[in-house]
Image 1 (cartoon, rainbow, N blue to C red):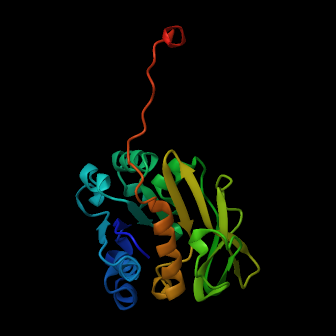
Image 2: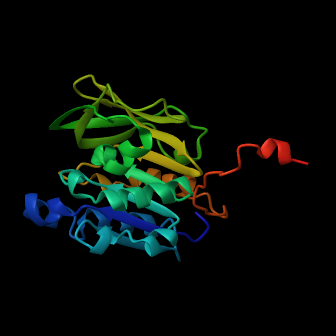
Image 3: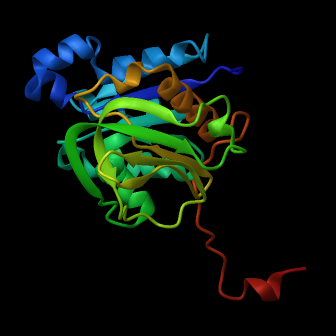
Length: 249
């Protein structure tokens, strides 16, 4: 891929520190955010790829940081409620102004995702280490470029319908599981001037983010939401006088 971007990978970091320290240290020695960031480096050489976590000051999402960010990737699971509402509103403003957002796996319950989509984003789930097949259903979309179908994930948490999201702009991937469930695992949305890509594979108990094809999908998603060369601006609200139409030339 071409073009240099400023990419920020955000991860709450709670599992690494508290919930599964031994398993996580073996599977993701740099944390899940480190693995996701490393997976992007081969696709975006020369780009600024950084990470941030919940424990950082302002969660690593200050006004200055977001203003310099082309794409924000978001992974969260058990600490959604600990994310500051002020930070969420800040991120929302930057997405509406044109910053790209990639939401991963259990980030479907993240405050920023539900706020932007306006629904509960709830779903069915079961974690028994089942095989997941990720099927491409819109091969013409740039996010599907170079991606084999299906992607085989040997062990993964099951996500199933109903997935309570608005009608997506694009349905790119559908997953199927051994129990017979299906899930809209790769969807896009546009909010304001910003693009959003949600991709579900990537539970913390399995080495999904080390799979080359998963890395390919995430990298493609980053490139699509980035909208390189597009001018970033905060959304504004017109405050024209009541009789503005009478003053028009």
